[in-house]
Image: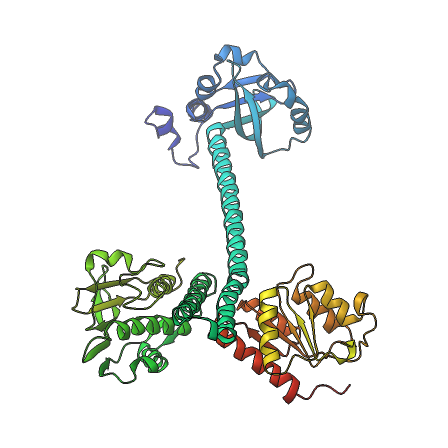
Length: 404
Length: 147
């Protein structure tokens, strides 16, 4: 703290009998030391007369901080550094002054230049120069309050913005739901009219219609059927984002087998070698993972259709992650017609197709659905292929739900 | 046609669906006693014997009510709710026939005690088959509650 003389004097062993002069000298030395501490205390401090409220002593920090000289201070009363509107509170506070230590809390003080500052006041009742007095320590908390206000304001602003965004999202979600509800109800009925009345023509007026007209009617029905399928697929796709995931520990091997069973019709009368590896269990929504395998395997079966001997491999491999751990990568590989890797980024887009509808049927929703499911599981999916050299679709599954 | 002879109440606002449904029922001789209403309010009038249907005996249930859900004025679910809330009509057999596969519709209508829920296929052959089966089942096979 300090190397001044009074400090060393104060270190005199306690309880040593001293004569009167020595005791007075020591008391004076002690007073000097405490005066020194008061004067050099880093927070503004002062002593005021409890009766007259006049300043009796102020320290350097007070002089520095408030802008008054010592002399000016000693001609002021503590009420002089309060804004007028705080006088009632000050009087009430003075009336309730207690003896001893008191935390008087938050007050406003006026500096000599007129600026108001916020202070936190701690005080203690003392006797000073024979008078009842209060020693006060004032801490300027203006900056802290300003920072707190700013934090509070920013928090409130953030909260308001989150509320606003949430409301917007909820409204968008409601719109989307109303939209898909309406699509689901209203978009199919006209298709049934197209398909139905084409059928009526074919049944009731077949004799009057040349073969070519009948063929056109069949194509109309076919178009209506395709659009119906498209609407169903799109609705299922949009529902994917809304229904909650039910994660369980499941075996991808069992799920893949189930998917192959469901695709029995696509395997009939074909030479297909299907290899299924034993795969490690994963955390996934069983119904959705089944959808993933059904879509990937339906594609594999579809695009190997021209092969004399189709080969499909459902497997996995361990892949090192950035943090040194290992994670399983699941894949479905086929020896089908593949695709041009230049268009790989288009694969997973809704309605994106890399093959002519006349060659390979489909609505272009299957892989978009797969990707949406994988993303909701916190995983990723990617594809590699060469034209006419087969394709391999690989995916990972995350630990839990991520926002799609 | 006399009101008390009604065997099928078809609640359908889409004239195309109405015509196609009637065509299939007619083809299978199931359309002799059918009443078509075209919105929810008219459906309630029939069910509770109001307005144009004041002469109808509410106690005599049709063999089946084919109910679309999205209807003008009062929607199908409200029609169903009111029908189920009234003791005289609470046991009317109801088959929802709608274009929607929306899960909430399916759950809500089942909770209101429907007897079947059919999603009208887009493809006409499938649609015709669905209508035929529903007609045969409810008019010929099913034993209604004692009248």
